[in-house]
Every structure is written in structure tokens, then in C-alpha cells.
Image 1: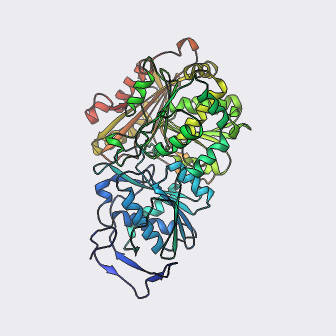
Image 2: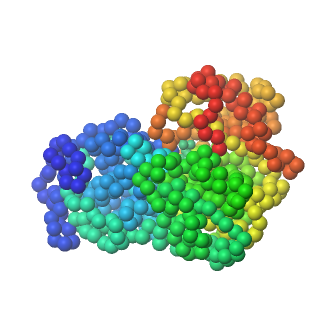
Image 3: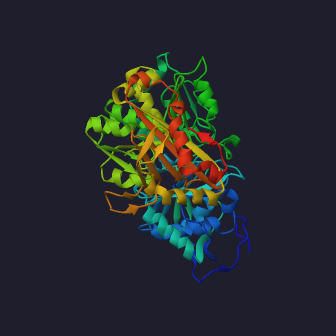
Length: 572
Ligand code: G16
């Protein structure tokens, strides 16, 4: 039997009597209850379910996962849901499937971004503004797209943030037990223009994906000051959207509203395969931008965002700002920005993020929380009003304005800061380090490892944790080693196994953990940092400053022996 619109072959269909609804145009809509069986491996990772496109295109795969989300939606009947994605390959087909499933599952209204587009932070903004019960965001974030690339589904709850572990575990349990899903039989809903459509008794509202988000940004930042900066004739910027979702947002906000000259935004048209690139804003995958910022005629400011618009990379002329330093600089200067002029309630960072922001928090007398990797761990702290700013080493920065990290927000924050200070990024950074000291920091990734040896390596290291304290590696001695566990201060939930921390007698630190966002093999992440208080030593190459720690990491985890790798694949 063929299913209209999806074109997929489906197995047995059960059509119970009366499984018809009448839409607002008086048309009957048939709902099919489709018999299915569970798939292995539908447990959401660090940020949603991410798999190869070919996995998601298997019959029933997407549908099983989506059906497993509906029972966790509070007050589903009559609820509003937000739907959109980063425009990657399979986005358009998946949106139509989800719309038909939402209609069949009693959702009253779905707001969809025009063309199926919504950046992750914009989706968070729209969920909050329209008091939706939640949102489904189709993205594999910074992972490559296209038919051979990755696809993903994230579920956000009513606060606009990623579902916490209790919810993702409930969804996972549903995927283990699913026997049937519900889907309406209906032609595709046109999404190319804003407007309202009926899908059975459900209303589909196609919205401008930029409008609500741009309005929020205008409330937080001094757009006049940024406009004046762009018009000063003394400031040039390059924003690389990497052919991903932030293109339309950046064109609309930076060029059209803030007066940046056309051409400031490059690679601004979202493409299904991101133009064959890797939409990950870091020193390796955003090489073209990095090269442009290190040339003789470099612009003053450079920035990039990722596939779904929640990450950011900040560059000055001949200067890269690590995400950890960026968070610290924003925290130290927040009072200069209209949306934060009353000061910060507190700050939070993920455990592997450098401790640069801790120093700012200590100086300002505010709380600083250390959470596991994953934006979902900030949700409770933000909701409880304990923190205003948070960030992660993985190019994520955000605040309580939404419940996701927010790439363009971070760029606007920096622009506002530069408009107030009128000094180059590298000078601003140097002054920050002079005040607070510099946390030299780097992350080494070993991608696409065979999963078994990678897991064995960390298990073995885990077993040796108790024997490490007191051992000498090069010029340092281990003072502390553990596997990070987190107790959420708001709801008391406990998350264990969140990364191995090794601290040394000079307070230098190594963290080892396996990525929770990859789709191919395993990725080992090694995070390395060392504090340098003396401004006379602030201008050095982090790889050289951290060489001793890098060697110690290899020795402690026996990386080469376990993986056969002699060097990381990505250094940031
Ligand atoms: C996701 C999460 C982030 C996390 C990052 C890295 O980002 O939202 O909170 O820091 O993954 O995770 P991992 O080290 O496990 O790969 P994104 O941008 O991929 O959604």
C-alpha cells in the first residue's frame, strides 16, 4: 500500500472505524494507525537524535521517533507546537510527515517557519513567545548534510529549551515499546509563503522565521550604536553563514536593519548540503573565514554560525577568541549592553569549558555553576533565575533571552560591545586577560574512531582513576582525578559519567570525554587548559604553552595504544 505524499511503502495499516475527522473546509481527513516495530538506538544524544540520512529514511524510522514524542507533550490535545529546521537535506519531507502526524495526534495548531526554516534559537524564541507546548527542530546541527550526510530531530519543551534527560529518557522508552503510530492522509501543506492552512482540524500557520527573533534582538541590543559603528567608515565585518540557516537571519539583521554593507554576510543562502561544507564554525571547518581574518587587508571583526544557528565563532583581525574567553568577556562587560545593564544574576559553563568565566564571576561576586556538556543542563538554572549568561567551549553562548545557545545573539553582543568600546577585538581581549589572567585552552578531537577501542580506552582510564593522584607527568603531578557527576541544584536530578577530569598541582587541567553528537564511530575529545596570570606571558601560542599537558594526556589515556592515532583530527 502506498502512502500519499511520503511516497513510502508501508506495511499493515489499521483503520479503525470512525478514524476520520472533518477539517475546517469541511473536508474529511483520514487517519491511519500504522503498525510498526521498535528500532534500536533511538536514544537521544547530547542534543536530540542524530543519524545518517539513510537511517532516517528507512520506512517508519522518523515516524516511530516522532510518535514517541507526543505522549510526553503536556496538554497535547489543543496544544500549539513549533516546527522548523535548518533546511538540510530531508528537512522538507520530514516536515510534511510531522505535520500529518501532529494532526493525527490531536495537536490544535502548528507554527512552521516559512520553507520549513527555523534556526534553533529562533525556534526557542517562538516557543516562548507563542506559549507553545514545545517544538520539534529538524537539525543535526554542525554535522554535514546532503544525502550521505546527517539528519536529526530535537525536541524542545515549553520553556523553549532542549528536553531534559528525564524527558529524553521517556521518549526513548516509548521508542522501545512502540507498536503503532498515527498519521493523517493529506496532501503536502504549502510552506513557501506565510499564511494559514487547515490540516484536518489542525491549523498550520506558516510564519516568517526571522520576525519574532529579530524583534527580540532589537530589545536586547543597542541597534542604533551598532548602526553607527557600521556607518563610521572605520569598521568592517565578515559574517560567514556557511550556507546554513543563519544566512536569512544575518542578511535581515546585519545588512538590512543594522546597515552593514551588502557582502558583509557571505555564503548566506541555506543549501541542503551546506555547499558540501561542514557547517561547524571552528578553526578547521570555517577555514575561509579564518584566512580572511588573518590576511593583511582583514576586516575588523569576523564571525560564523553553524548548521542550525546556535553556535558562534568570534574573530578579530589576526585574533581568534576561544568560546571560553568569549563567555568571560561577555560576562565582564554585560552591564554595557541594554538587555543586561542591570547586571547578571549568575553565570554557568559546561564542565569542559575553561574557567575564565569563573574568574569574572568571583570578581563580580556572582554565582558560577559548572554543568555537564549539553545546553539542556542550563535550562533549570535559567528558569529558576539563578543565571543570566551561560556558555560552552563547543562554540555555544547564550542567555536567559531564550533557552538555547544563540549564534547571532553572541555576534550582536560582541558588535554592541565593540560599538561601545571602539577598540579592536585583540586589544579588548588583551585588556581582559590583564585584569583576570589568561586561561590558555585547546581542544583536541580524535574523530571517527572505532567505537570499541575508544570506549575501552575510557573504561580502562576510569578503572585507573584512583591510582593517578600523586603521579608525575613531565613537570606536573596529578592532584585530583574523577569522573564528573552533577546534581542539578534546582530539581536534585543526578547525572553521572559526564567526563573524566584530571587536575594537576599547578591547577592545569585535562578532561576526557566521548562526544554525544557524532554519527560515525566514536569521537574522543580532550580538553586542555592552563592558567597564566602574568601579562608578560599572555601572547603565546596555546599549542606551545600546552605542549606538556598534551603529552601528558596521551600518556595518561594511552591514546595511541588504544586508537592507533598519533595526532588529533581537529584542533580548536
Ligand atoms: C550540542 C549541545 C551542546 C554540546 C555540543 C557538543 O551542540 O547542544 O550543548 O556542547 O553538542 O557535544 P559533544 O561534545 O557531545 O559532541 P549542537 O550545536 O551540536 O546542538
